[in-house]
Length: 379
Image 1 (cartoon, rainbow, N blue to C red):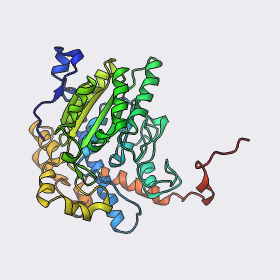
Image 2 (cartoon, helix red, strand yellow):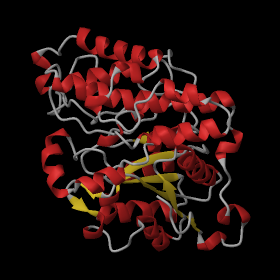
Image 3 (cartoon, helix red, strand yellow):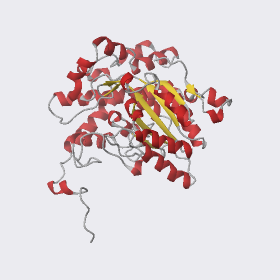
Image 4 (cartoon, rainbow, N blue to C red):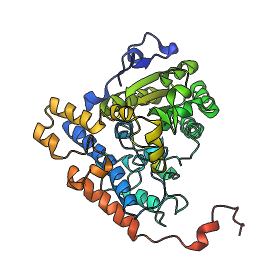
């Protein structure tokens, strides 16, 4: 995942030290921060694994969009945000809904992020879910938590993010919004229009591109004329950064550099996180994906598991011993090879509570079916 450069400098700020050499957010992390980041990586992976297993047991319906092998992007982009900042996740970012403001707040359902129970209720289509069974996956949001409702039109939430930040700017606030998109979305017209608007008005919108090499079944070379979609930032005179999407600290460093730049009033940035999609576009696409992607490509793409990459770093830094690093080992394994023993007990426990909350929650009343579809009569 090495790139020929980490930053395409903003032409308007050329020559400045911070534009050419991004500051490293990792240097301000404590030992506890490092362990919290590892725990969040475990939780994001376990969420994915548990749902895949639930689906295969016949206890879950609907399509699953796996974030397996892309957890470093979610944890790395979210970890340094303020609770008041906004995010705009997409279908492959389901853990983002509960990872927001999770730092040190695992047992606090009043934090500025959804509870894992709410997210599980969404997956199971229960009345306690944000979407109240109108979708079983990621078409949810919560303005009170700073989460923009995701849509199937990738890049379609970038203009919404720009509007949120513009509103905050008019109020004199330094709010930042992270919006997530696949590499295929960078070829859409709305992508251009929204980032162009954000660049003109210097809005603190940080566009995260999860480049997992495949836009559904379309490879990158058939969707983009440039190898690095971060190069598209040049057309808007904004920074285009490339992060190793398998390295949570590289993602954190690049994200926080862009976040602080935006908070300082210098405008938007684009961050391309190079990664690889472990499974099909959704579980309905797994069999087909095995045909349009060769086994060698998949093995190579998954060879640097983000959990393994981070644990290697922690051992080198003396934060974990080799024995501690081996104690829980989901890395490099497919979901069907992974067991609860591969994860810390508290991670298993919090997900278990989320699943139980969902299964114990009622289905919505049938009378709700027509609500929020047509205009309600005024009374």
